[in-house]
Amino acid sequence: MVETIEREGNPSFVICDVADEIEADLIVMGGSGSVMPEEGSRESVASRTIGLSPCPVLVIP
View (cartoon, rainbow, N blue to C red):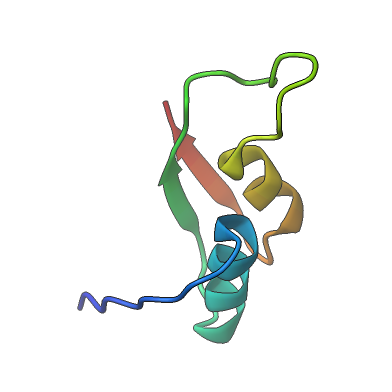
């Protein structure tokens, strides 16, 4: 079954909130290809999601 959920807000927080609400077993998301953001750059959505997630996160480069 596939369900589409639309929310507004900070992507990492929204992804993690929805994962918690639906009791997700895994989050699968694409990444920018960079494991560590360069100095002075903002943390990637994938990196922040990994740190906040209530479940494992699989990042596809």
